[in-house]
Image (cartoon, rainbow, N blue to C red; front, side, top):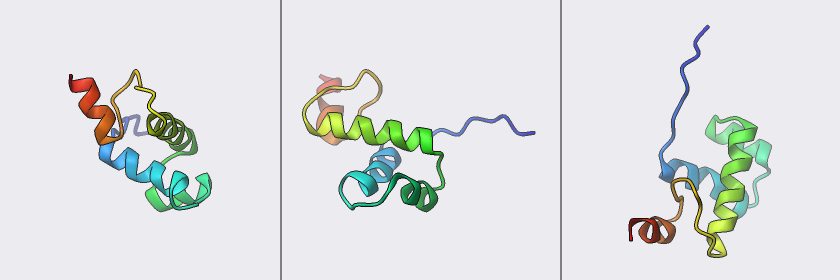
Amino acid sequence: MNNTRRSFTSEFKAEAAALVVNQGYSVAQACTAMGVGETAMRRWVAQLQQEQVGITPQSKALTTEQRRIQEL
């Protein structure tokens, strides 16, 4: 069995979460469209929603604005 953990770029995560937040997809539909698990998608959606209201995440930011804030 393959136990290799996949990693995704911030851009991919933002694009995936934007399907739910901005385009009205359900989490299940977005998971199918992007080929990711539901837990990861829900985490990315929550993070994107927080970033959009100005909360800087502890992990790597998804939005360009929050990435810039983290760089500073």
